[in-house]
Image 1 (cartoon, rainbow, N blue to C red):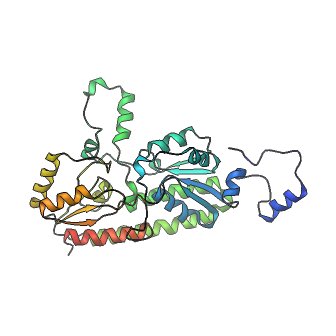
Image 2: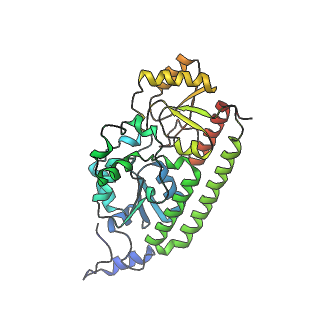
Image 3: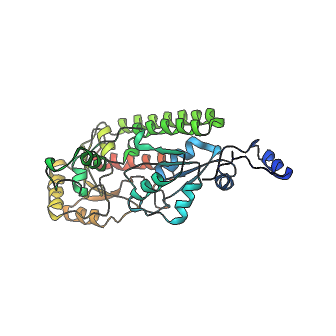
Length: 330
């Protein structure tokens, strides 16, 4: 990444005047390419929507945010183009969540970026057990066959990445992002801190609303298309049963479908939830076989015209409405 604090021997008066007009004052800060792309603003590349949302809310007018995952694109299997890799190299910072998008993790690790903000380092990720077993990471070798290093790598694969669906943990990530922005772009540190405080307050208010709305329900069990609501369920005292694992494209076994049909009867489950970015065919088949309703519970991996809201908060409100109906909130 080219850096503008390199001393150049000949700079025209016109160039210096242009810099002064832009309010830069010196040839430091962003790379030439990223400054041009961002109109002189702090240039941030976000890996997918939940990271993009944080960057935009915290950065405000001081940042130029681009995302590697296009609206409507399922983020888990994203493969980066050469253009996107070049975009990464030319930016001032990358904001991502390691463990969700392997190609993004690899590209950021190999990049020359000075500021790499990994949301997984800003809160505690957890292993939600059978979620990872369904995903195909469980079993295969006895414990004696693994070295400590292999155990560590395997454990990292088992961590559930869908942490943004817990507003409390998302707020912890927001605080870390605000600190990182302030450090990387100290000229606007005060604004970043104010924006972060406002966002964190809003997330805590959402947490209170969710807690109150889901406190008294007829059932605590809900069925989802893929296992993305583990943190959410843990936060609000619910039980998520996923048709498939963390990977939304994985196919459930016939035994798993029978198990869910039996559980629906035992636990008073009324609804099978599917999502907007992947096919709801399996969820609808299960619902038809078990005599259940279907509805949308959005894991907020992207915002499209089909989303029930145009940002994180609006979609989370829609999720709350759908869950209260499905769980029989009183």
